[in-house]
Image (cartoon, rainbow, N blue to C red; front, top):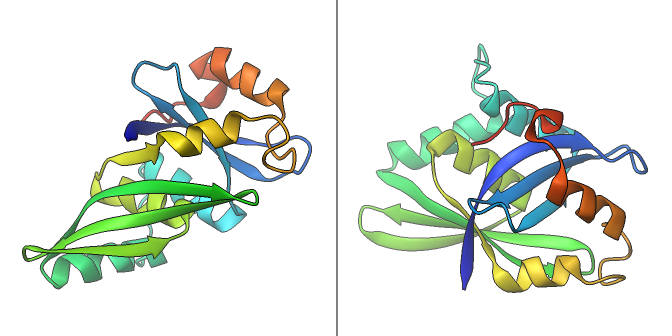
Length: 160
């Protein structure tokens, strides 16, 4: 089963100095931090902050191509977590034909934000991410506890 989540914020991991996208469900009882690359975090932040680029960025180009081909992104789903790597699928509707496309979660989230498509996470991914030691300690329990109780103001105005 999938849980609908929203981008709650972006932050920098103080240990690895890598950006983290924070996803939360509407009840705010489930949180999922996903470490992403700097360029992907920038693409997500630009969309959240509604920054217009003078020329289409890669995610804008992909959105435009899908739309010009008569398609739309129905939703994205973060489907798995293996060896500290998240996996996602874009669910497209191309003139009535359902198509699934493998994607990195960071790219999928950047695209979902541009298309106003919902973001879902499989419950098994949330469960796997919360197991101590399961993910090569990329997500310390300390960070998870902090994220569950953090004041949204500390994460910026990023709820989408």
